[in-house]
Image (cartoon, rainbow, N blue to C red; front, side, top):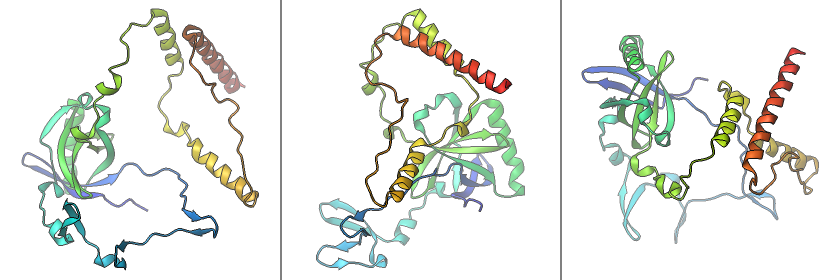
Length: 275
């Protein structure tokens, strides 16, 4: 089933408007949902919306309220909230362009595929895509989606374009408070060379499919074992190759051993492939 558009509107660059749709570029991975259970009865715990002194209330009796002082609220219905007009609700205006590498990775939040709305929009869409690609720049603007206005970075992606929502400056913690105590001593040249060699030996083309969610797999195994035990206590074995705790005492020896281990691993892999 095709994904539903998260936003429909137009990209505007000066006097040029391009009708587009935004679709989520990512989806939630495999997950296991747990419920809260009342252990003595084995029944699921449910929650009701209640008003103190009144009791449970119907959903259609609930509206939004802003607490301007303790226990005092400004009540707003949906029509009033919808009346707050923002041009960015339907228009992503590209107000500036920056070099792609200038945006720190901390600001990126969620990617969306940007698709031309119809055949008439395709020509202008392709022109903008190619202009961004050749310039190496990223277009910036703002749009309103899911109840808030967010910054968006528009960039080319193969035959299409991607819009990535960005965090605002006040949503990103400053790194200095975390890294100020890290020393600035220069490491030994030999240590750097060994580390670079290890990185080089482990460098491969990116393939997200090579990684699996081992925690979800372990949860499935635990649940299966619990079902087979018919409610009995189950203890899963710890991984035999789990790393030992404690600090590395001899960094040089550890790096050399890692490089040697990486080399022997590659040699065995090549033997298996040739076989």
